[in-house]
Image (cartoon, rainbow, N blue to C red):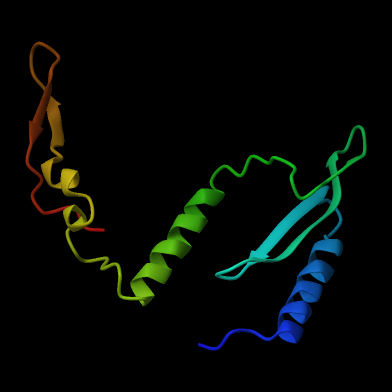
Length: 125
């Protein structure tokens, strides 16, 4: 893989900014960042962070991203799979040994205490 040229990087940053600045109606504010392995290629924002006051969105505006972390985690896992550093079919305990000790909840006894058992198969990544 070759390093991107300055011109390509600048073109990519300009294209990203065009998308950020053209946020569709109904989207109050946008913050976006683009990085390579060594630096920030683009940071930009548009719109407002508070529709009541009209205060501008900035690149350091703190946002609640909620379930977006699942998409980031999924993307990261797929990249690791592609690089051969993660095997989805391998026992998860290969990566986190404590997962090899996890028990399955099988119910509760008469005293209300959990009844645990060993899993029927190993947890996979």
